[in-house]
Image 1 (cartoon, rainbow, N blue to C red):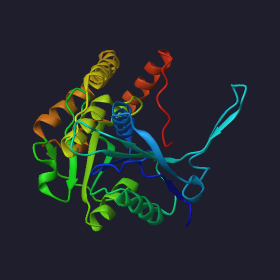
Image 2 (image 1 turned 90 degrees about the horizontal axis):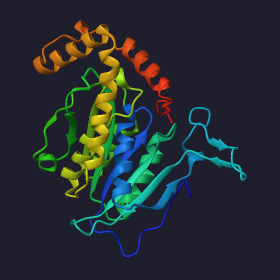
Image 3 (image 1 turned 135 degrees about the vertical axis):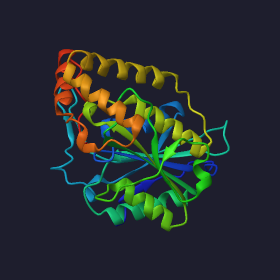
Image 4 (image 1 turned 180 degrees about the vertical axis):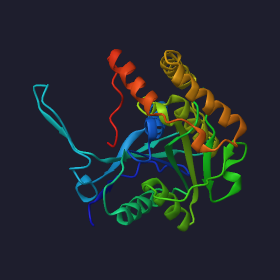
Length: 293
């Protein structure tokens, strides 16, 4: 599939670059993973070095292009996967960042093209980021679920092992295919409160950014993310405080987090809190981010 991926290697070459990948959509609950990689790119001044042709990998009825008719010059923005590079002179290596909407089709071809491209840049370490909805309270710090091809890649991190069997997204596929190629592959997953899915979960974003820092040895300033995480918790707290039923839900989730032995069936549904959060956001004229982009 010639021309499906276009990339211009930076000059001079990147130093032992680490690839960090996130996709919007199914792998990105509460926009935590895409927010994390965007923050990393902004902090490190990442610049675009390539992209993937959307026509080869997207169903445009599922992931639609965006049109803007409000300006004098009308624009049409197609969904795409961007490849960016960031030089990190204060660390031993540089970064290659990959961000876009989850492809709709031809995943094996997409993964092969992407892995070929980053290996040609000299990458030996491949980090995927994901976020999932889970029965976790918004009041607790986020503990990442981690998969790694080598134990030493995640030394010093407070993590939990994966315990999942079922459908996967492009993040899971890329992680396993990167490992098959002999890359040092790490997958970092942040659980996000299922009842607060309509709000960007900055606590999960913080955990992912810190996780990337541990895996890559590259430092990131988390001051703003921590402030956003506090605001996220306060925002959800306001909703919870106004409804005793919602307070009960969060209290039971907190108890489950402490005991780790409570049956999931004992937990009430989060549907009511989802509705309350959406109403709260509408009243603030701060709509939730679009899903499935």
